[in-house]
Image 1: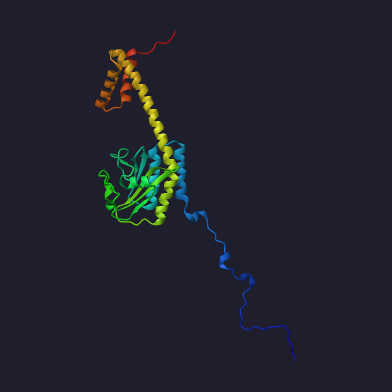
Image 2 (image 1 turned 180 degrees about the vertical axis):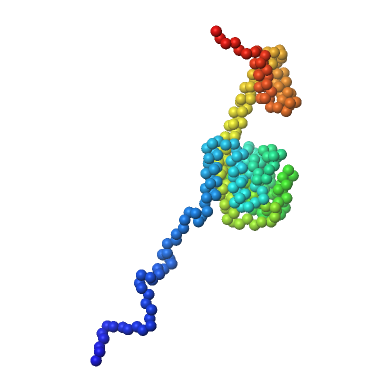
Length: 271
């Protein structure tokens, strides 16, 4: 008699090797590369922006870089940046060309949707009929006023609003929470850049004004000496000539100084 102890026989049973038993999904490592996140456009944008700031590029170049990036990010029909200067928001950058109003169009804090955003430091999202919003202010100089949808976000630096960015679409359009967050995040990231560029621009303007003042003072001295007139009269003549010839006072003054130098003739070498 055949006796088997401690043995179990299985028929038609497939046994999976232990090495091939799958581990629970909870412990499965997640692998991805940085390229999958598509960070290149954002990184390139921040790098270019930093380069422009380091090179002390004019304010408009920095703002144009921001407008171009945002317009591509959210596929909008219009993008404006209003920079806070004193108590006014001044239009400093636009996706669509508006040379006749750029740097001249202003609105006070609290006026219009952009003014409301600057005052309350909160974004405004209107998917349609933006012009019917109680905060809307008509700006006849801008055809974008007729656009349906608008996203307006504050740009903040060191806890202070430095500008407001408006993104607009001709047709009704729902801005997703992700788009609102993305544009708002850009606003926080570029706030310091805009403030630095604005201050650099102010320094340049002050430097130009000082240089102009020095040239005008010298030109006034020449006119007082040659025409035996007062300082006020010399200034009035320079101002009138600038207005009539559509030149700056600096250009008129430089012409006066050049004429005076030519009148004196070539300087004689010292023996």
